[in-house]
Image 1 (tube, helix red, strand yellow):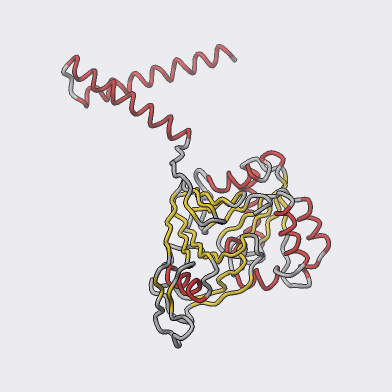
Image 2 (cartoon, helix red, strand yellow):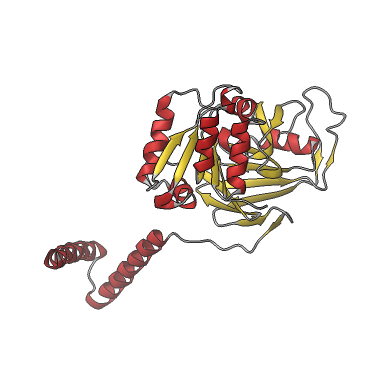
Length: 322
């Protein structure tokens, strides 16, 4: 799958603390040279939704953030909006009503410009509705539940940035297993992808990798046995032989061959440093207990005093250099 990176976010991404997913989006969009176009068409909110992402992306170092907000198919033909997308190194689609987003954007000059941005190497990302529209087929609306049932959801055409897939979001939090199973039972050529909140499926060169605190669930129905073609109304569906992949952070999956790649967890450098320091403290405490027979509470107080002295010494050193 040629083109730039795709970031498929399951919604409710962290905007207050580490902002890891949004930070990664800005980095993939060019970091300090990033020119990001925000498309809030799916949202029912006004300018405030753009103001939030504008502030977040600039806080992470983006050079420019622009709004591209068509509210009708006619506006989606606006040359100025298309030009903004033509200059963008990153395109971000917000959450909201996915059917509104697809009905306004898909098959218009703005939709074509998003696809063209991806093809020339720009990073295209989206959260919630902005995630679903990246697939060739997208869930327009439907109900939750674990059991696949006839007619529990409806599909619409997406932008096709991830061909041969159907994407759902807020997956674990809103119990959307059943409706994704229903779709792949009816269309076994599609790979079902469910993305949890504060989690992103990052697709680069045909390989999906996972970042965030949740998981990406893949349903491969290539060998499914189903009665979807004859089940009536809201009857439960037979879905046997579907291959399930639940991918946590660090997992990598080849979308072309539909196979899991060698798995290794990547530890955040900051977390690794904190863990190493904690390990050193524990080892030192164990040595002190063995040497002086002091209680752990005494040693904790001693360690706290030592850290304060060290911090004061570091501040003095920094002042001398200044």
